[in-house]
Length: 183
Image (cartoon, rainbow, N blue to C red; front, side, top):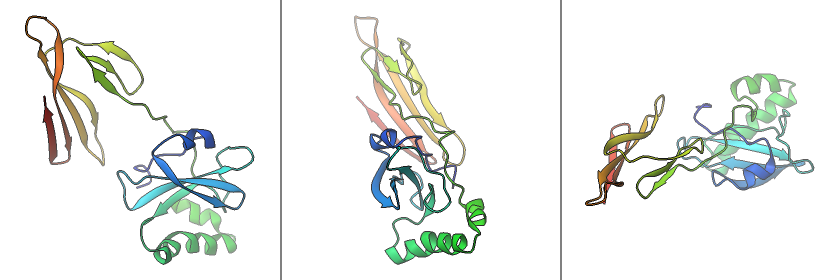
């Protein structure tokens, strides 16, 4: 579960402009963002930043961590998250709590990029590389394999009397569900 929830940005200003984070809360001297539960509705990442420096906080009391069942009632949220953390840390056992819910780090964070295509296909990839591709056929544009399987495909066809190609359909498959759009 920890691997499926996006990691924290290294600074407050990076998180501020990413739509995948919201629900800003104040915890002690820190300001915290919570990730949106796109792939894991049972868990979110809370990323806390110093209000004075804007740097990701990794301390054991108000540090960034994985939160379970964020959309349960407030009582269930407290029982699943804040009370266990408070009990462990007040007994001097924060380290045991954080063995199960590791403090966040931004070392493995990758910034969000949009991938897109237009025209006779001009494509910008997720790593921000841009190129033109005039092939005709069906192609895998993006694939993720692992605990969550997602595949995004595109179809290109020739434009009559031009020799150019254009995107004519897209399909997304997640596990056994497929959605296709044709033009």
